[in-house]
Image (tube, rainbow, N blue to C red; front, top):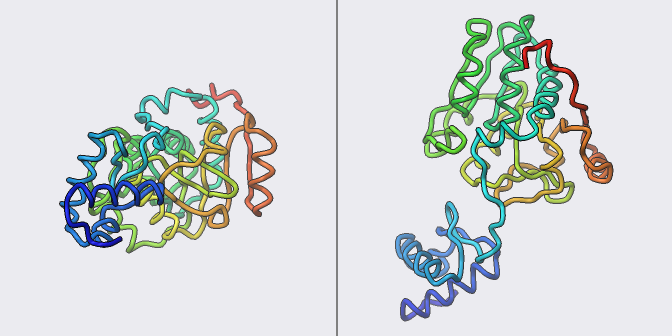
Length: 272
């Protein structure tokens, strides 16, 4: 991108670049336009005020492209709770005493935390999480479990910890298994998340684990969102619910992914 002689000309070029890319990072736009990141943010704010683009964390997207809005943890937990709990029971059955587990933030992974606590036979488990609600849910299992919180910057919507500082601990560990959540699962486009800061932490969890299990209810299948988390090939298993469309499950299995679709059963014995 050539150097702009004036703010209006520079902003025109920025708007064109955002439109061409679909998503452009502030740092890349600053390098291309040879101005500071502060200047780029000011330009993007002006373009957003004109209705020409939408600013998102770390950059900007064309106006109208951001269609998915992130629900709070409480809202997500209330939706299809019986299905999420069935998925959680299946995921918790994959965990054994003495293992180390990275437990991602989210409503389904929160259900996994409750299911793990109820598995009284599981001991000496080390659980590392970036979710404050998940850490509190695991507290009743101490001292059977050791619960480690990543640290970082608090996002109130999901009660999650993100960068800066959230991934420092993840760079120093190698866990047996990561149990991950996401807002999008697509055979071609992989695992994605609507929130960029959380997607960054999820990517680090994928890199830090030997086994990777994705827990996602059927509403997430076929969806694609902004933040890339992993390719399908980077996962070992997807646990979803039996309401998923057979064609979507077949497409995921064609990528050599183990897919388990569980039905919502009776959870009364667990007090759920």
